[in-house]
Length: 143
Ligand SMILES: [Cu+2]
Image (cartoon, rainbow, N blue to C red; front, side, top):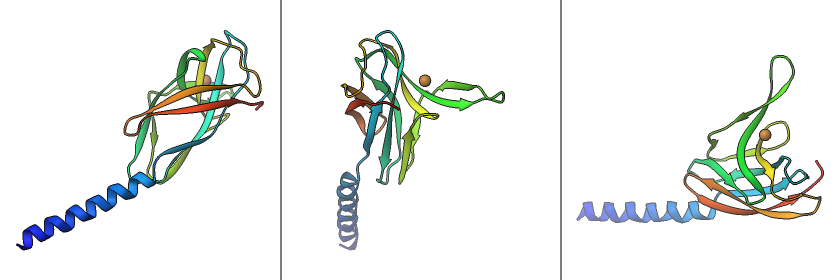
C-alpha cells in the first residue's frame, strides 16, 4: 500500500516538473541580419534564452534567403586577423543565454538568393536537438 502511495507521489512530482518546464521554454529574440546583395554573404544574429531545466543544442539553421547556411564563430587569431570557424553545433546550457552577435557566433548566409535591404524581413528556422524546429522572422538592420 505504501509503495503505491509512493509511486502516486512520484507521478505527481513528475507531472509538476513537466508542467513547469513547458512554461520555461527555450526562446529566441533580438533576431536581425546584415544587409547584403544577392550572391553575397550575410549573417544572422539573435539571443537564445534557456530558462528551463534541460540543456539543448543548436544543430543547424535553415533559410531560403541563401544558397546555404552555416553556423560560424568569429575569432581573432594570434596575428590579429579575424577568422571564422564553422561550428557543428552550439550547446545551450540550462539557465543561460547564448548570444549570437557581431564578432562572435552568427549564422552565415552563404550566397544570398535575394537582396537584403534594411527593414526587409525573411524567415529562418533553427533546429534544436531537444526543442526541435523553431521558426523565426529576421529583420534586416544596419549593424
Ligand atoms: Cu561567418
